[in-house]
Image (cartoon, rainbow, N blue to C red; front, side):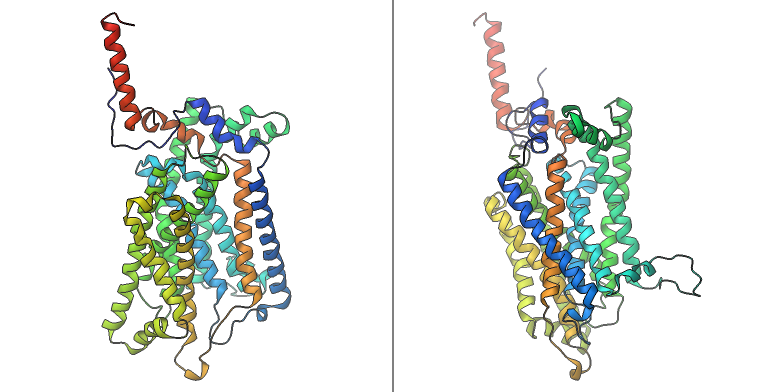
Length: 476
């Protein structure tokens, strides 16, 4: 009896693949010599990493005075970058955990790179608050450890302290989740390797044999970690938003920040995944596994979260007006009409207006439009964090202390350099590990391969039926 075929379901694996071809295609980037494009990208990324290290050393040696912070604006590009990187680190766990629990098959093409993106983005984010301390060796005081210097304990009432626990927990669980998914694929690469590479991948695979017991435990652990990660996705950026929302400063003291920060984090994270996946897709020739269907599904999430963020912006403006509180009203008027008006309108253009282009299916499936929009959105999300921090602090209750903040070359170097750190890590990862999950792609081949679903499957089914009819009548 032939299987039922859906003409409406678009295949997620193209090229009429079998299991061996999947292994060959996805393992190839880890086995062959790096391409010229990868080498050029890696050299640019390492140059950015060098700039980052130089900027950090300069900051530690000369102090925070090398930044352009002033008595009014004590947070500048450093905390802006911190919140931006934490936001980017959100989509990886969302794709992996929530979509795994919801059994969404389109996640399999993008989840591996998204999880890696999470790890590297959180590494970048975690460094900014430490650098912001000025005396980085004092970072030990954020941890509650027994000491002989009297009641010298961290302030448990401080949201900055909650950040330490939230982000370290998120990083640990995300790292476990990412590595758990990699174990079967490391074993696949190990079985194809020889010499020192075989020994390396043997250690990375933890003795994986592919037995039924191994798979059973692997799937159970993946579900447990997904269950733990899902509330973490919601809690981490909620706690980051508390850095602002628990203060009494007009423009920050608002209850909409937690859900609005979470939606914005998913929005920016998905945009960064699109940027990375489109580059990886082209660089490693993985068009058959990262298809237009994957790109379109991601763009649907982007337009949804972008619309939620837009509603949050308008809600903030409405509540400021409705409250009748003149200081709150001034804070929001100053955002739109004050000295930083350009960042506010840049934020609105990039985050609210531009994603609406994805309501049109043609543009949702256009790779160039998607690529430019993904970069555009992350510029807009950076502007959002800058608007929240700089415009709010630039105008306080005393006009005599009002000031204008612009970054020094050191702050710009730290931000550009953090991008170098991120892409250096990602490019090394893409050379060492399969950038698409081999085991998970194989698990959906029989239901989502183009020879089993869509128009091709219907044609194949009709051909098989005709052949069967001819055989029944004795024709060859």
